[in-house]
Image 1 (cartoon, rainbow, N blue to C red):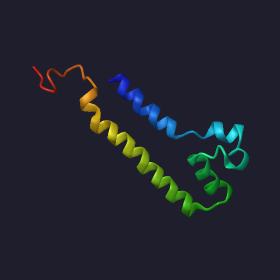
Image 2 (image 1 turned 90 degrees about the vertical axis):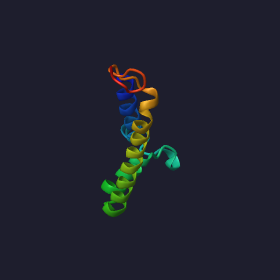
Image 3 (image 1 turned 30 degrees about the vertical axis):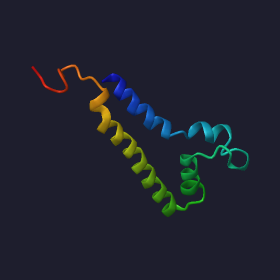
Image 4 (image 1 turned 90 degrees about the horizontal axis):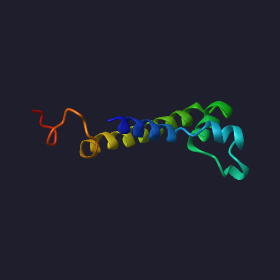
Length: 91
């Protein structure tokens, strides 16, 4: 159960790589280190194009929720809950 929580939070955190790319390279030479979140930040707060930035944020939200939903859907097969005995049947 704890491993499942750590996996979910780690996957969500890995989608949010922003500070490192912003501080170290700001997108890098020829946008070599331009991440999705950094591009979203540039659209919203540098270029003030809130419409496209909002659309990208919603798409990003759907992607993250899809990944988390997939993990939750398959969790029954690989996560052991302490109260479970024989595939979900309690004594």
